[in-house]
Length: 348
Image 1: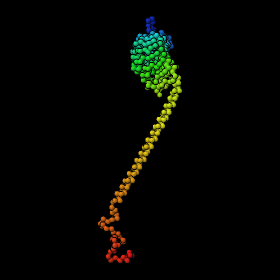
Image 2: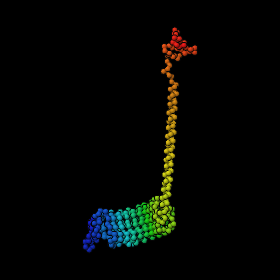
Image 3: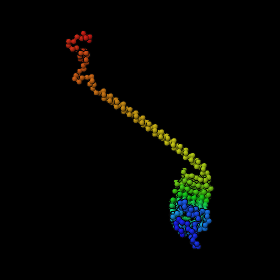
């Protein structure tokens, strides 16, 4: 085999089978992707395993490949592998040995199940296994709690195992369109983390109340013999017969509720402002009353003080000055000082 990053060449009979000529050119882009889809090759050359440091994505869709090198596990950086549309009767065992595989596409083959070793793919997050011959849900998937997206459309499933709700807690998207479901499996109602559920093209005539699926964001139920849209949460987008009218009506109701709530908030705000203004006015009135009372008390206190500006502190009697003469107030009238001629002065 050639070294890492080099394209192996044929060294004669028994030599290493080379990869396609454009392999090195594709890898030179630096994104770690090899796109061989549509090229006819019955087996994947073992020399692919020499690209362990460079290869991140490998697309072999529609190549008719049926043989995979046993040393595929050496591709420790491989994250995406596409083997769809290759008429595989079973999944090649080496695929289950990839240590860091995240996305696996094996749809449009002839698979009837998955091997027990599939559970070793604990880093797998996305599995597309649509358009195969699955009559039963592969129970090996119950050992993969971190699987997030499971595409199982166009198979022959009639039910789902009840353990999914507790064993596949990481599931966020589940595509079950084109199967043979006659009713919605009850276990789906317990998948509270599920965000996307596709039940198109089944035989479901009655849908249960699905409003308890708090994580659900999209439900597709088209091409089922159902009479009315399923009951779901207010934020769920529906796809199916009558869904558009249902969502428009729901949107109108939502807007009406929002308008009513806004009006109620405005009324409450106005009431608060009016109450605040009344309290401020009352406080202002109390302040003015206190000020008037203080002023009144000051005036009373001022009136109670002796007026020393008009009274002498040396005499208890009241004296009045009239030019140079002094008179004492008495009941009998005025008594002039002795010797004074009051007629001359014009007093009398």
